[in-house]
Image 1 (cartoon, rainbow, N blue to C red):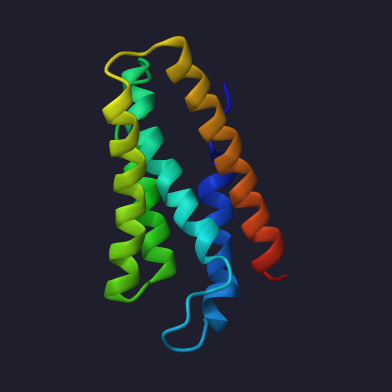
Image 2: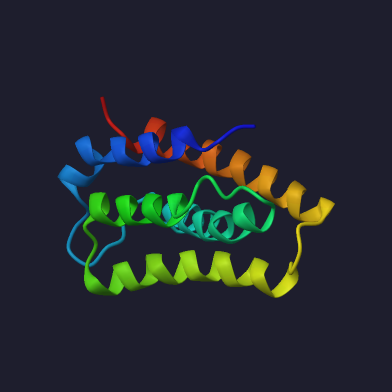
Length: 129
């Protein structure tokens, strides 16, 4: 089973250059849409993984979300937007799945795949050296 090792490593690697330069005041960074989607995926995984019996991760996805916020150091408004994306990912799956079904397992795999791809793409495009 794949875990989003690239997710945290990739997202945190952004801090070295993309965050250091930073966007102009008030303008979101060019990777903002991808970052919001990544936050949504973390929320979905925070709900789905324990639902499907993966209890060994504990608060892993929430912790990874906090690491993203800590690295990004967003304004209060942008922080609220990132957290809202995480919560939307969590609640959208909580509304649909009350038990781990084959469809829920497929959703987990898709979230892991997309999260890994997004983290990689963000680093490649915006991570600098």
